[in-house]
Image (cartoon, rainbow, N blue to C red; front, side, top):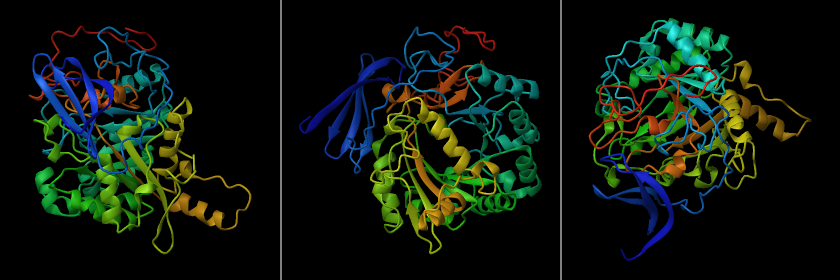
Length: 472
């Protein structure tokens, strides 16, 4: 096509048959498209970048850092040898443990397609085995308890206490917040057990949005969940799923809601919708929002208080997977940036993504996603720096973080990005699977890695037995 410029080559998969196929990153005006062709099922394409900052300016090459304890060998190649395999190019930062597949909502958008599995919850001994598997795979790592909806378990506090006792010093909870809203004592138990912070599903301030995405009005319950977390000094990160045509206009109001609830709310982590799980279907570019479009909307909807240049790619995962900007809320209400592409501050940029990048990402979460009253949120002070002392104290007590993660699906999957993933899911059999690989579904909703009746390769895949410290 006239005007197309092939930027680079990579590999992807066919959304119909999951075959690994060549792919190209192609510039078409202000957007970049991933294009590929399956010999059996024909061509596919999906937009991966649209607008400013430009795709070229966001590039951040990094040195590979291989897993300390790979659990699988390379046989079929990426993405079918995850475990992690020895060719994965980044170590684990955070691991998701799914403690249930049950859920008290039936959302139209769900990575896990929760509520459809017939499996019983893993028992307490099984949870202990999961923690042990993480230790055998090179942990302890930062942990996110997920599901399903983890708060449907009455023993969640015991699960948190167990993890703490085994050396996991940062445990966050991924939740819709419904139980946190109605049971303040439950929140108290989680805090006393050692919970570090809450990842709270939060799609906007309008109940019409929740009715479309989550099936019923929920905004009041979200407010109550934040209030109860404040009373028990639990840090909260709001996590909106962004769906074009439904809640893009709420980006600014969500940020304002978070800003006015500091220091309990530590920031907002945006997640543009992806086509897997319960949001499966043919990919349409008009139903996607890319990283630069989110950043542009942030600047526009905050009336320039937050600017494009305040954001930068991560130093840990692949640069095109995410963005982040770090701020301190000043007494007059201003958000003062302390990172950005022009800031010169290397505090959490990770630079070349070498061995220290994942460690810095883990420490950042421990320091700045928790409540400022928590012991792990301290900020050491050096010699007096005049006005800098006050600014550093505001960073400690009133830090505020805006970030986003562009998860990949079968249409826009770029294996170069996947190989640098540092967010992994603990498979029931003990393997560590990159998040986007674990949740991949084909055009009919069948998965490869996620356990369940719709697993595409459950029959043909050979089973493996894992024991701590041993490779399969």
